[in-house]
Image 1 (cartoon, rainbow, N blue to C red):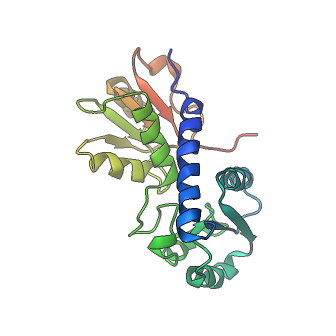
Image 2 (cartoon, rainbow, N blue to C red):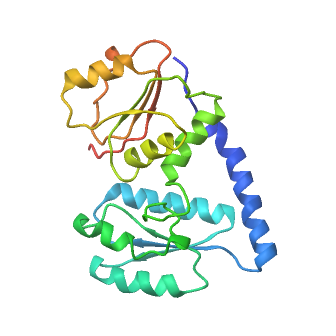
Length: 224
């Protein structure tokens, strides 16, 4: 088994990003600033993501402010941050405490400040999609003429990675974790490249994988 190690690419990507930030500071005279809005304090993975985003941002020279507020305060805060010229990026940390308002709140973020790539007219790719494409490119994996399977069609990973590959004139097969196990196993056995973006632990068993398949697991879940 061969592992695709994202850690091998981190140093290169971080140095590249650091240079971009320094160039912005030198050319614009302003430190890039990111605002993260957090409304779901009981969601432990989100707290971990917040710590990582703040740590990495500050390593790169980006000012990162986290706003822990109630969800009902979010529209007003987004509106204020949208108008603030000193704020260059806005992230609404998902999942929300009340997920039914997700689309409504995300679309309040101006596309120029949507660094998560979630608004309908966003100018950037979602971060995890970019990470998957960087990982494949870093290992010189050519997706042409490959059977590609994407499991999960969530708005954060599954759906946008599907769209990103379709934009490259690829035709990935898509399933979600509601498909029955026989259909899933058959699709896995046919695939050359599998990208799992489902929040279901143990969904893909090692016994149904075959030699030389490329498997990228981008799913997250809470278990103990």
